[in-house]
Length: 360
Image 1 (cartoon, helix red, strand yellow):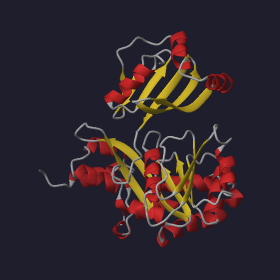
Image 2 (cartoon, rainbow, N blue to C red; image 1 turned 90 degrees about the horizontal axis):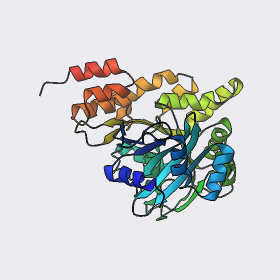
Image 3 (cartoon, helix red, strand yellow; image 1 turned 120 degrees about the vertical axis):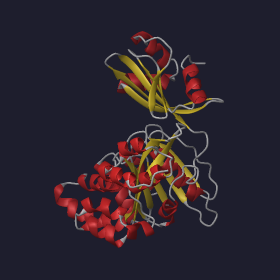
């Protein structure tokens, strides 16, 4: 057993999400979003190197020596699986471990809005899941795949391209092919090119990192595949801007026109602390396809999307703005005003809405 396993066992036992194990600092866990140092000595350069390298296979050590960083999944029997990033930094070797829940989440178990189910009913198009690092994008993506997989009324071929593979989906009513970048395929773009020849109904792109990947995802959506992809943006509007801005200036008008037709929805999320202190909850901004949203994209009026999401007419369709979601969480006592304001798109407007709430 590698010596670092005892730290990972502590992460699981404490219900933490991450372990930061880096030369020059004490081992640190992230619990409910907060970093907490463990009662252990500061790791020396040689000590961190020994702890980390002894958990690697020979092939992984060689890859780390060559590339100076490494992504993989580390499994511990009876404890769980961890997504790991190992890297070199100024004080020596470091690694970040994120625990992967043992069970594949569902839309209900994550407390996602019911309107999100509409996203998996489409036969083709593009769905974006976005949010900052550590906001639960991977869990939401897994819940969407699970929704497809558990539907007895339709059978789909789902191909996921991930870096690395986190949640393991057991085929139920769908055929699921999971590929890991660096292990099963060279890159996201090469896996997407291959996927288009593998008769997919649904393609999941773990991260839409560059123009080539985005272009291939759009091509798949145009040719009859439902594509789910993730982006590191803070709102639905910024996710749309990110897709368009990836293209050269001369192609952006054409891209806006295509995206206005192909975009089925955007899920943008942030994790906020519960008022009870017991865990965190996802605050969701949900954009669903509509004529009004399509027109805003095509006419380059994306800056109007945030206001459109908050309008009562769009909320009837199942959409919701981030701030309206936060307001409901604060009103119900699930989240404090202080926590909600930290991630709000319009904190001043949210503060005024909360101020108008009746006293208990």
